Length: 226
Image 1 (cartoon, rainbow, N blue to C red):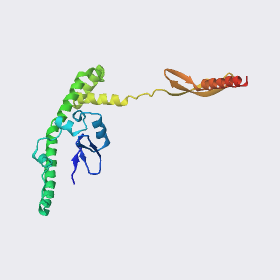
Image 2 (tube, one colour; image 1 turned 90 degrees about the horizontal axis):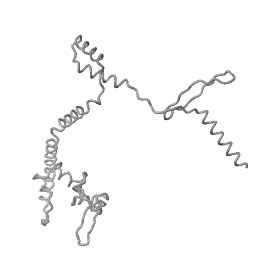
Image 3 (tube, rainbow, N blue to C red; image 1 turned 180 degrees about the vertical axis):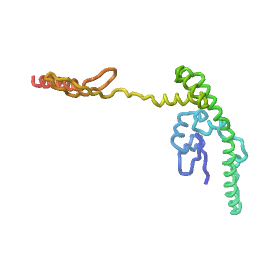
Image 4 (cartoon, rainbow, N blue to C red; image 1 turned 120 degrees about the vertical axis):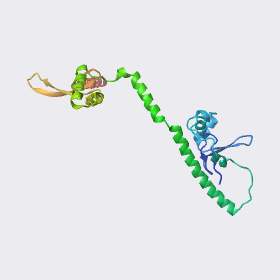
């Protein structure tokens, strides 16, 4: 059973799966899925799409130069069937796949070495450039933390970080809009509780809305009767 790679993305195209495209000159193209077939018909370059093997190999993210990759090359040399040779070939394929996986893990570790340090350096650079946007402590608070550090023997910077974290946690965000309840005094001396919606920048009285709605309905009724 031969498993051909996808012509566009490089993934394995299993037998009876995917799409086979036959060109007028007799050349066949195997695709693992309709996505690759559509991109091929749109004449897109697989080296410019990040989800293809060609892009990853061109960007240095895949192992390209290795002796285990030569065994997967297609050979159009007919070989007479031999049971012993077939058994040895299956064992060799398993062993080669193990070696290739181990070498791919080593290649990945070498490629990703130092990534954490680069991310930390980039984050520190970003903080240094936008330091004016960070929250700051008042002079009185800094003096109080300095006195506290002298008494307890703690680090001043650590105390300042803790104080800033407490301030950030204590801030509560107010939701836009809401409902407000207040008391209204009637003309007969009674008191009633009404609710108002806060929308935009002012208050909207629900009772006023209801009255406007009823007025609109009355006008419509009058127009219908006429």
